[in-house]
Length: 393
Image (cartoon, rainbow, N blue to C red; front, top):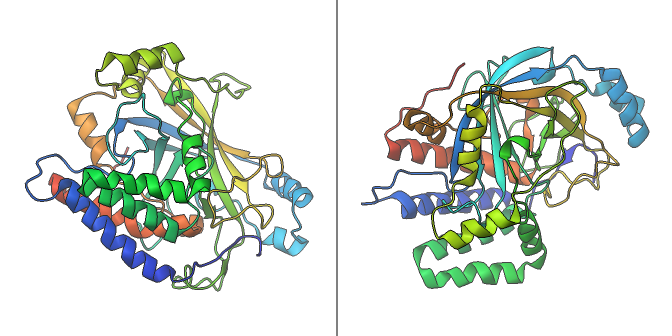
C-alpha cells in the first residue's frame, strides 16, 4: 500500500449499479405512489436547521506544515515539494459566506433522545476554480462532517449488504430482524455503530466534527478521470477535514465537549412526547442578540499507508498526524426557524462531489457517495416540486 493512494474494490463498478438500483427502490418505497409525505433524504433525514455563517481562510505557513510532515512521514524531499497547499479553497486568505445544515444521521425522522450521529453539512459559497465533473453547482464547495471520526462500514460491498437489510425492513416489519442479523454477523461494524450512538451533544453549536472520509489536495498531471474505482490512483497529498469548537475570543482555545444532561435525556424519553431538542437549542441559542459560535477549520494529512483512505472505519491518529488550522468558521445571531427557512434547509443539496477538482473526494465510501447522492437529490426535488437553484449569499 502506498501513501496518498486509493485502491479499487473487487467488482466495484458492479456494486455501483446494485447500489444505485437499491437506492431508487428505497426512495420509491418511502415516498412513491400515493404517499403524500414530502420526500426527505434516505440518510440524515431529520433536518434541525439551516444556518448561515462565515468561513475565513487564513494565511498559513505552508513551509512550517511541510516541515512537520517531514518529521512524521517517510516522504522524500521530492514528494514534499510536490505538495502544494496553496490551491483551491486554500489558495489565498478570504472570507466565504456559508450555509450549514445540521441533521441527525438516521434513515428516518426520530426523536433526539435516540442514539444517533449528528452531522453538519457545509456549503461554501463563491468558490472559484475548475470544478469536479459531478458538481451540481457552479461556485460552491461542499464539505460534509459528522460528530464521529469514522464511518462504521469498511467496504462498498458491506454497505450494500447493510442497506439491503434496511430496505427490506422498510417493506415489511418482520424484516427488521434482517438488520439485527446483519449486525450480529458483522460484530466489528456493529460495535462501531453503537460507539457512534453514545454521544448526546449538549449543543450542535459546540460539537466537534470530522469528515471521516478523505479528499485530495491537487491532482497529478497524468490524472485520468476514468480510473478511480478501476485501478489504484495516487494523489500529491490526501487529507481529512475537521471543525473543532473554539472560544470566540483570542487565543481561541478549544472548547471541552459537553453532553446533554442525563436527567434531561431520561425526562424526554419518559414524557412520551416528540423530542426536537437540537432544533430548539439551535433556535434559542442563535436568537440571542449576542450569539456567536466558532470552529477552527482544520486539515489532517495521511502520514502512513496504515492510515487507510478506503477503509473509513480506521481513524487517523492525531498524535501521529495532528490537525493543522487553516481557517475559522463563525456563526452569529439569526432566526433559523420559520416555514421558509425550514423549506430552504430541506431543499438544499449537498454532495462530496460538489466542488473543486483539486479537492477531489477519495476512498471507497466517497466514490459510492458520488454515485448515490445525486440520485437521492434528484428524486427529492422532483417529488417536492422543487426547481433546484444554487444558493448564494
